[in-house]
Image 1 (cartoon, one colour):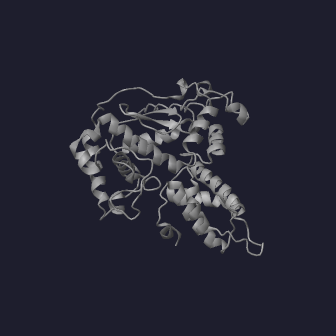
Image 2 (tube, rainbow, N blue to C red):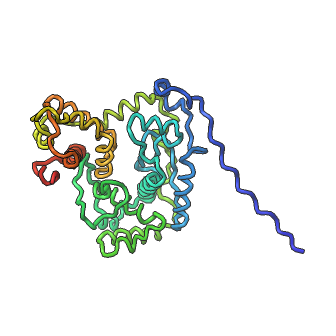
Image 3 (tube, rainbow, N blue to C red):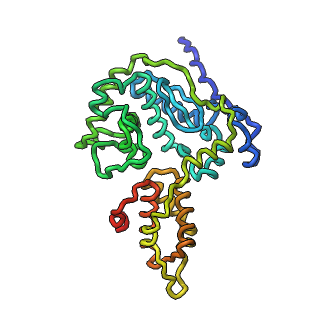
Length: 353
């Protein structure tokens, strides 16, 4: 008779932490400091997603595991082989607060969250192995020292870049190009060889594939365990955080754009039966905001602030809806897209056809 020893049981997942602030009203919760929330990833909705990321890295043959901590936003600082994830992903109560104030939860859905986790992992592995220092990396992606710009004009039909995050983010900077290429390479069942066959972007994917095989079993060159701006050390309140965030995402609308607004709406009230432009924008703001967010990848709060400015300008200029609603929606979406991305040019007619 052969006796087989039982396999050790997997450790039970940590229980979700209990917090004393979960049932607080928004106004009271906003006055709590980040430090006082005592947030942790263990037992949070974010933990299984990070474990899923680690599984993807394991299947890709990489020993590298980025350190992940909670902060106010997504970022991977230089000199650290890890990245921060936004605090609101650690608890559904905080995610609801984020959505109420900022109108969306970046990384709230599983698919978007995994895309962002892969993207930040790319930055972390770049920092950990100092990949952008390599001549071969620069020859493929460009110079990491290039300045970041607040806006950029993507080439919508370009085949030089892969697609992962919204609004052709790979075109914004060489480091983002690498991060997006790595994300597509790492994504399970992405079939990147088939999907990008014949594209110049395939060369970048093949470069990443070879580079990852080279460093697969090597230890990182950078081993800092720092966690910049981790929530456990932040004394600012959530209210102050959101005040700063709303200011950052505020609207830069200028009355100089009124010329384009009057191309969408009319100053003629007609026989008095026309709907005011302000009322139309308020009635359609949810639909318009969603359409523009999909096209531009911009934060919905930014779009909403531009919409608020448009409503005010329409009231001041006393503008009205003159054409069929479907035409007005197309033209209003085009204008809002241009204003939101800061790409409004004299070629406005090209956007509104």
